[in-house]
Length: 275
Image (cartoon, rainbow, N blue to C red; front, side, top):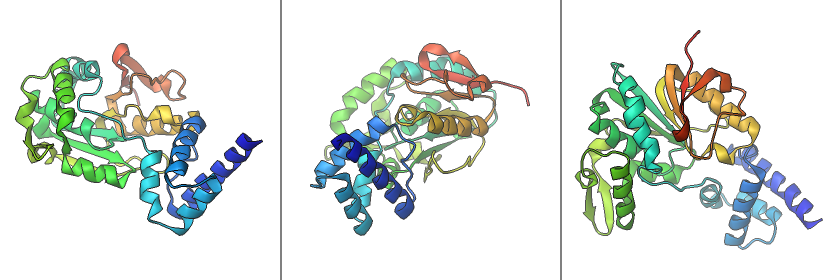
């Protein structure tokens, strides 16, 4: 009975967030969103989701922190190095045939993947002809992405990932260490645009040659996954590339036929040709 009441209150809370603030988490995986809302409920000292709903409806200052609970902010530079090695060795030769490029990192969190791609594209001679779009719904994460400042203690992991991803230079060439933080070179974000965009409610905003959206779809239910993949399909040019997370696949998507497996192990897909 308690679980059923919890579920009812959680659905009402998600409806309240949507109608009051237009953040739509109603299509997220129930288990995942319940786990994170339970953590938020504890953080705000509420005994029930209804109490949390009351807090968020009557105190707008609660919302930003609640959004941080609902949007997973776990990433690192060159996370899953074999994915970036796959992009470097298999996808980049195709991208080099384009006179100009647009890359969309959907669900960019604090920008680690955008910086990873900017570094990779610089090393491969593509940076100057590329615009990088990093989008997320979390305003705090976007501010961190704009700043490009990361904890110094994370740098050893970033450095090892960069090496394993086939890095052609030293990662230290791209940041300055000061006051316990690593500040990444501003030149890396001169061609990056960080912007608010929701895969749940917003439409395609640009035509791109590469979409990288990793470890985001796993938090969506099937309908929402289909919506997001449909956006990627519509955004990609013919023969454009889509990169997903290690535990994600297009296998059960209604848009699967629009793509071919390009690098199966690295979860890189290519949009098929045709009209």
